[in-house]
Image 1 (cartoon, rainbow, N blue to C red):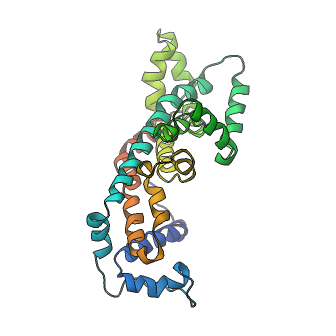
Image 2: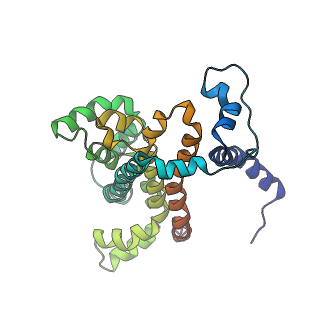
Length: 282
C-alpha cells in the first residue's frame, strides 16, 4: 500500500483545521460558564462595545449548560423528536423513490430519457424560494399544511438524490448487466441483485446528504409548519437569546450527534460499496 506524502498529509490537515476549530469552539463553549461566555463573546451576541475573544479552554469548565439543557428544557426533546420524525422518513423516502428513478435514467433506454434528465437537472438547481409558492399551493390543496407531511413529502421527491444515485449506478459495469440479461434475469432482478449492491456508494451518499439537508432545514418548516409543537430543532436554536448562549452552544453540540452517528455506523458499508463499484468495463 502506497504511503501518502508528508506534504499531502499537511495540506489535508490544514484544510481540516477550520472544521476542527468550529467543533472545538462548540465543545469549549458548551463547557464554559454563562458569565465567561458573555465576557468573551458579548460584543458579538449583544450590542456591547469591544472585541470578541476566544480561548482554547474555559477558565472554569462546567457541565451546567448541558445539564440545564437535558433536565430543565423539555422543549428541546420535543423539537429533537420532531427533527427525527421529519428527517429520517424524508431521507429514507428519497432512497425508495429516487433509486428506481436513478436506475431508469442510468441504465434503461426509452424515448425522452435525455430530456427527462435535463428537466431533473433544471429542477435541481432551483432554490427553495422559487418553488416555495408552488409547494405551498399543492400542500394546501391536499390539506397537508401544518403537518409533518408538509415537510417530508416535498423532500422525498427531491431531484438531487436522483442525480447522486444515477452517478453511482453509472459505475456499474455494462458487461455485468449484459451477462445477467443473457442468463435470463429481468429488469427488476438486475436492479435488486446487481444495481443496488454495486450502487451502494451513491445510495449512501444520497441518504447522508438528504438527511443533513432535512436535519438542518429552516425555511421549509418555517413556511409549512404553523404550530409550535411541530417545530424541529433547527428552529429551536434561532429562538435562544444572547443570555442563553451556553444553552445554544450545548444544543448545537448535541444537534451534531445524529449526523456523526450515521457516518460512524455507515462507514463500513460505505467502504464496501466503494470497493464493489470499482469494477470496470473491459
